[in-house]
Image 1 (cartoon, rainbow, N blue to C red):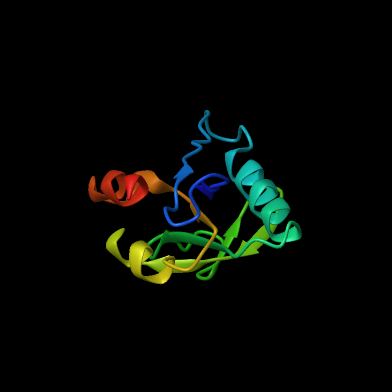
Image 2 (image 1 turned 90 degrees about the horizontal axis):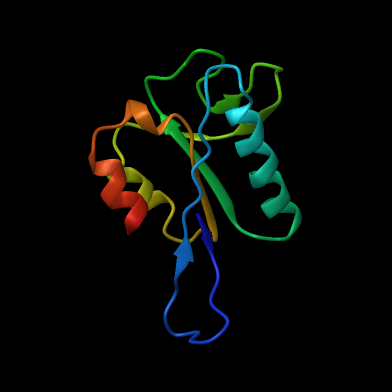
Length: 108
């Protein structure tokens, strides 16, 4: 999610981007690329992943070509609201591993 508000600075708004595709299509690589660009632009970035996803690393999101970025593992989507409240950009990797409350969290 990227937050941007050029009209009413008292109200913060943003948008959601979903990266989807088949297995090995580069979804994680694209997520890492977008988050790195946001970091280079000076935005406060945080990426969250399900705590149970330890395939490559416990505290990193890792693509199949071994590109990686630091991440925060969380048990539930509600933790994302707490831990990401001060971020400009929030990335969520492997959202399908979360329960349906991830939709409400993303909309919030």
